[in-house]
Image 1 (cartoon, rainbow, N blue to C red):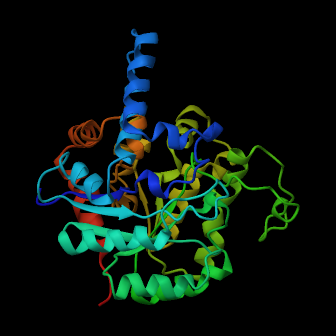
Image 2: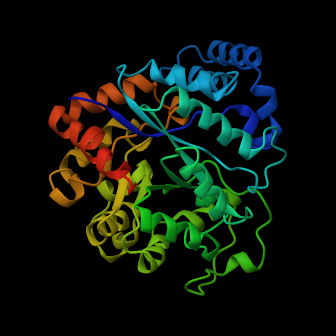
Length: 359
């Protein structure tokens, strides 16, 4: 195998995370390295028989976010992989999720990524995050792709918008015309809109269906579910888009545990498979979802379908993955299970095609 492509990573620091990102407003407290290390040790002493190292994992997650810069986090990530590995790095625009003040402006985050791209031009592939509530978003996308050599576009609908929002249509027109890749979050979210659920939000903008008022995390599934991409792809059928996390581990588990009936056609895993089969440039990555090794056999089986096989991408979701699985274990375990041929397909062959753009 020549080169591994990790198609889903993050390197943002705690400075771009809203103050109320975690419950009870404890983000800033836990983001202090001495605090998170102390807390991890304390919790593990309280539960010394834990075999999951859950507290160590949480402390590791917080410590990485507390690195001094995105460059430091990226260089830490590189150490888990062979020297020539290439990384897709996804920015995050959290300003509109209504979770409190952010200490570093979004453009500062992007400019730092631009500097890393200059230092590692052949290994570092940043994606610019878009939000329909940000003014002049299409101009920002063009600027960072054409002037700063960003590779693609990132969507995160659970922050409070639908992927088919028409304010993003100029972005999609530009992306489709230039074959610019898009990666969009598509699993039940951990990061989600924290603002007020208004009366207008209780009606689906495409179907007119009345939506159930739920807690905010569950309500964010309405923004996130893969059915939404059917409307987007009707208008942009050649759009090159990856539905990140392939629906999530919980949806894969439902598929494995449930006898087939018509209701399964709505399961996120099934919907994404159908979208891949119908549209020529729809992909899905296995980031974070494959931390559950019980799902490896299902992945191996679907890779035998030639159309699906050519559209699955390797990604880890660093450093969000730290909450469940060490980075190196994720990559090595998956590679060992799939074998070199299948791993090369999702970690090298498919990513090269997905990331290729018109010049």
